[in-house]
Length: 390
Image 1 (cartoon, rainbow, N blue to C red):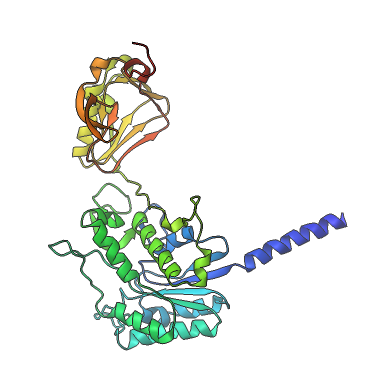
Image 2: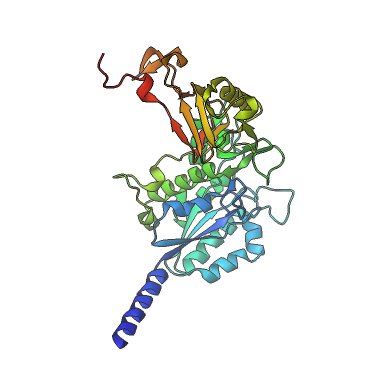
């Protein structure tokens, strides 16, 4: 019994030692990197996403807060709280600027050539005094394009001030300002909206009105920005870069993998039976289902619902902002009659071709999905000649 107790105590001790040995990464800054408390709301800060790119040897402490500048972060006692928790070997990632620019607010405004630089220098010196490692990050870009589609800067002298302090204090610099500018320019005017909060009414209960926010990020955008920060840490050859998480793919880190955009849909449902569909296994429901899809898309999007039952159909064409959802117990049975699949212009293995229309297709569309626990049977044995004798 004593041996078992000693062994258990050793395991507990090793467990605590493992936890205690992890380095802490503190994030200080404003809303662009702050953690958002409402999981049902679309907004995310890039600091929320950064842990996805770091391994188990570090733990992220996100102290960034909406609306804070270097000045208000210090005056509200938030910096003191970070210092109290900071230990030798930890890291502090520092990104301010959006709110330091607000001249109309004396509690936040910090002149880029004086107070802003002084505050950044204070963060660095007091971090170093604790034996920890500071990293400066330039302000992330807002989404601003001119009439020619060129990204426009809104941060004035603040990014240059960050660079000057980093050079003077000899600390690593992640130029998120330039990296995010390049990302926005590459994506272009319309696609870059997905990085930010651009939603019409009906998508989120927390956002009942139309949202056109070019400063704050969606989860997709925040993940992109966190990946840019990770890339900057690697470029600067910081010790923290050694903690960047590996991916399942050889020679690729997790942050280097493509960010996947997950579409969201308006909370509106279009039931196919309301458009004439019948779940009798005999009625061909192609017209009804496609009418429901078209109506849904033209209304701004939503869910086209395939309820429980056997639904016979021919080709279905998905359109913008449509989620085709099959309830549990639903079987979408495609016809096995070739005559139900007209010849259409398409491609085959990269070449132009004329072939039977596919059971489910979409061309030049965005934000589509097929979801649910139902089943789809393409009836391929009936109409597609595969390994059949003539």
